[in-house]
Image 1 (tube, rainbow, N blue to C red):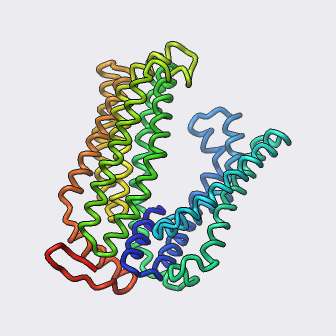
Image 2: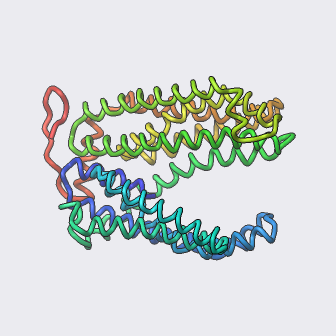
Image 3: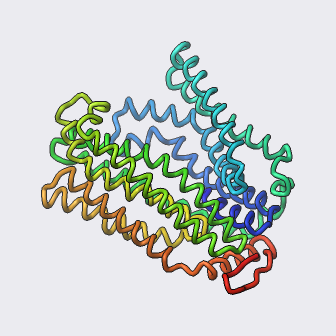
Amino acid sequence: MGSAAETLCGQAYGAKQYDMLGVYMQRSWIILFCTSIPMLFLYIFANSILRLIGQSPEIAELAGKFSHWMIPQLFAFALNFPIQKFLQAQSKIFAMAIISFVGMVIHIFFSWLLIVKLGWGLGGGAIVLNASWWFVVIAQLVYIFSGTCGEAWSGFSIKAFQNLWGFVRLSVSSAVMVCLEMWYYSALLLFAGYLKNAEVAVSGFSVCFNILCWVLSLAFGFNAAISVRVSNELGAGHPMKTKFAVIVVTLTTLIFGFLIALVLMATRKQYPAIFVDSKEVQHVVYELTPLLCGNIIINVLQPSLSGVAVGAGWQAYVVYVNIICYYVVGIPLGLILSYVLDMGIMGLFYGMTIGTMVQTFVLIWMMYKTDWNKEILIVEDRMREWGGETVKNTVNGHGIIS
């Protein structure tokens, strides 16, 4: 839900409505804190919920206790995500990186001290996780409140409670867009557990899935960068610069994906042994590698395209794209190939690949057909409705400019 702040803070910064960045961050805090309250019941009743869905009593009890201990982290998330989007919109990445690095060092040291040295187990892990996240939140707030953000932070404002409904709609669309993407891969991994020789299938799929997640964690750097760039340029009224940024990030991420795919194909016989000892699982990973490489090339592009969508405020449209491509095409096709045509884990992977490929092509087509001049007018209307008058734009032969 924090992606709503990402869209609006970036566009406001580009439009030089610096005072609205702090207001949008505060609106996002209000919405995320309100969202955290119903989510709190999932933490409180985690033990009962896990037992209800068939989890073993021992695991359910431990997970329930851990969920109780992790309640403070839930509210740290509610503060942290809007703060991140607020700072990213201003390209204050170095400060965020320093704070995160210090937080990581503290986290590693106290994890060793409480879990390994003192033997506090899950309780120690919960204490460290809560402390690490709250350290990051407090350090970022100190950085913001110290005056480093200039006009972007002028204190708490009653404006934060205005136009909340429009902000809620964009926040919910953002949340649904991201959840549909995350649940897609989790659902396929779940279905892998019902295949013949499920242990080997899930193990092989999990190795490939983890590699894909590692690559995606790097690709999400492109996601944040292009989201900020697109929202800034749209807010500033620069259609050609926006289009150029989209082309650059598309080509860059494709090259990045091809390089990683080449490395995996070149070490196709060797790298599975890094993850598992079983020869049978290694063979499954070996057979899945070509599909994994195809997935990587497509999936490294997908976060960048989603970043463009977030920067432009298209979350609601992407929700429909994700539903059709993932849940109407990808998962049903994977299940048909796996269970009906008896292709096993390869069928699931084919379904996942085709669903993601269709989604990627649809997003590329959307961006190709986009009239960026029109998008700037939409941004201008949004800024006027939610944050006052934007910079006035004029039209010349090269497009709309500030």
